[in-house]
Image 1 (cartoon, rainbow, N blue to C red):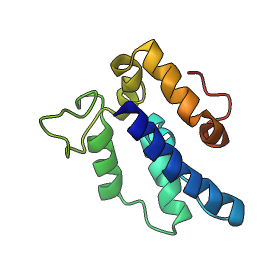
Image 2: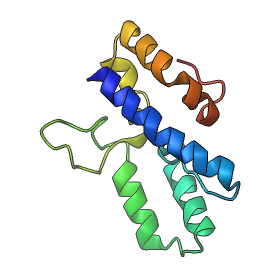
Image 3: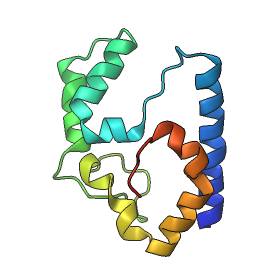
Length: 121
């Protein structure tokens, strides 16, 4: 399962990288950018898309990403979208063993380096 997930990630991001190389204006927003600073990230995304980042939108971002939310998605409710976005950024480190992390790195690093230069595994 780990290898399939890493392969799927690599295939998806390889296509995204192809689009980025083909069109430098192609806008890529990484989940980590939005999760790390949701309010600023979504405000920027709305602005870039020429949308109004209304008070209602800001309130929904705040509610959906708040620290009071679960730290990660549960298997019992996989479609829940309210999550502590900052805590979730590191949840993979708790779920994977060092060996699994090394395996994922080996399978994805070539493509991942284009999106996450200098990433600390």
